[in-house]
Length: 484
Ligand code: NAI
Ligand code: MG
Image (cartoon, rainbow, N blue to C red; front, side, top):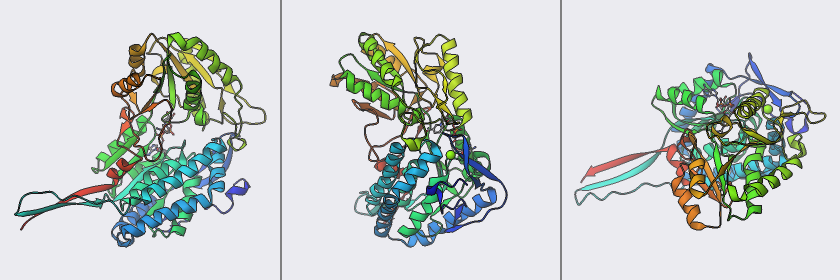
């Protein structure tokens, strides 16, 4: 392990049934993507540990967790939020080091993680059923029961905050959980048990196991003891997880990729739109499922807008996340090469490169960086229009008018989010009705927060996280009807 001061005392061992298991055998490295150096080697949880974790979650479900009243569950969740906030500085530094994201973004993620526990803490004691009127001879009512032991497969781009997004509503609904962080960014998930214990969460309610998808994720999602799988990641892995879940008839939440449009109309506040577009694509170097990776802009305002966009990009700094650059590193070398390939193939297919386009090598850093890049594509079938790049690459599509902008915006197999900048309320609302997307942002990209339901349509997946909607995944409804 490197001697980074924020890593002192973090146990890398899987957390199962309230204890750290010491595991011998295979390990996997986690890297600092800015330097390309190994931060530490993390023990791999194989299927025997997966089994122990699932067994522990199932035991806790009917045991210790069932005895905790909803009111106390509520207080526990709020205490978890407090514990996270108390250690926020350290968590943000570890998250930034492990994932490469700029420290200010990591700080935002940690606060949002705390906020999830606080938000769902507020509802844990208010999840109540209905009574159903059937006339004088019957009494009928519904009960909300915890869905069971749940599996959470976490991606590397938002490690702790994606964990909190699924875990907090699961716990609020009385379910238990096995968390598998991404092998590229396991550290903050490994810190989580510390806060859970201080908040009084009983052993077995949350288990954290680490390892690659093949050794740890696959046996977890295929385990017959798992009642729901919450997955965030690629479309291909999402399909594999759905098949695994189907084998034991478990429900799933699928938060998959996107190729989300940001529409800028000529009547929009162009300065606000520019800030929105920059944030939409360059947050976390574009490694965001809901990134606004396509700018669809009306022809009449395109030229000055693109000139201003390119001028701003030229001022961007690169660096380690911990040094708070504009653009941090790409998570892995293969991911860097994937970005380079799609950019090169798109240029070869006719897209115009107007900024960036190459792997970057900031001085003194041996890690994985890509220049902020802008491609203008007139053919909607070009790869940079259709494929999720997951890097700092913006594809521009020029629209003749509003209707054409709507058509271009809707022209991919994805449907996660969509943004529009305009002063015309009717156009904004027409667009909102027209577009296939789980959420629409009007005049502010990424508008909303933990309170606003989030999820996809088409290849971007299904099921909703965040807000009250997320809770539905974690309880089942039992109807009791009596003839009296
Ligand atoms: P991935 O989908 O393979 O990995 C996500 C998670 O799934 C990780 O925890 C991984 O260990 C786990 N996993 C992998 N195979 C599994 C299996 N068979 N069963 C259960 N769990 C499994 O994504 P990866 O390889 O990290 O990135 C590839 C592409 O996916 C990216 O370039 C990006 O386009 C997309 N992606 C989208 C994300 C989103 O937020 N929607 C997040 C991460 C990646
Ligand atoms: Mg790492």
